[in-house]
Length: 361
Image (tube, rainbow, N blue to C red; front, top):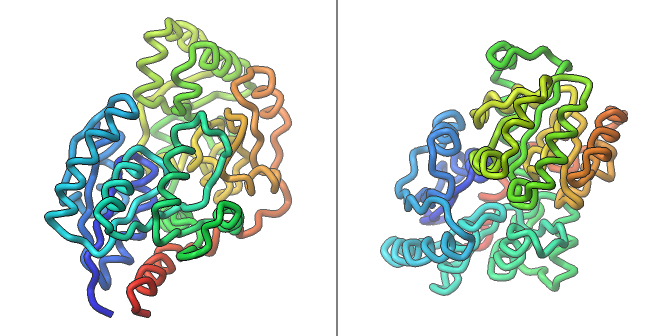
């Protein structure tokens, strides 16, 4: 098998987590060029993750920064196109469902460069979510579709996509298991002044919540009514909107709510796995809660990770304070937690799938 040249494009925190094990596995046999779009561009949401996850520094940083969906995607595409033409890769690899994923996928496909999509086949069936539009489009232009679950494979089949589909498991499980085995959570708990099982860990970043004053008001109201302290890792956009909406005083008046800046990945894993429960609108955090056997309340009406709900570990509540508090009060840990996301070697299976596409083993 010849050494392939693969350009991997990342740009947001969940993609950093997903890329870490794949980078390690890929570079054992092939040449990888790592590109950071700069979609998340401040230190707390970008550089620190590369450092802690052991991902090599990006070979290129497009430094696109924030903006509307159209502007952000549009600014990335010509920069990526120019890079793809210059480097002439055998393959472009993209992750998840961000604007970075769409921009890289479109730029590569228009140059007839094969695209590999990690986390292919996920569906929320809510087209009002920009992430849903991104992943559907990228799935339909990809040649190698790397699915985390049997459900995602079935979703692709329902859309007529059967060629190039591989069930590989979830790369986030690879990373979560690695750090669970090597990191003692006690230091993070001490740093944030919380005790195991005596707090809730919360994040809110989806546009449907963070860009809506009524929804944020409902979420804050729910947090303030919970029976234990809430440690809320505040996304920069959500923090800005709290100020703009005049909701900062409401947060400050909630005595049981502690707001902290974005937390580095290793500390996030430590805090999540030690919490009594997780409150989030993050897709990745729903899975991580499942990985570590922590009940999750998801502040959305739907989820791509349907297995977590079907198996009783996750409850969908939208942004309704009464539903949120009711779900938290009835939190329980089911007796079983099947291995629906693979066995922690997704990265190796991804490399095998790529090599198979190019005629190797």
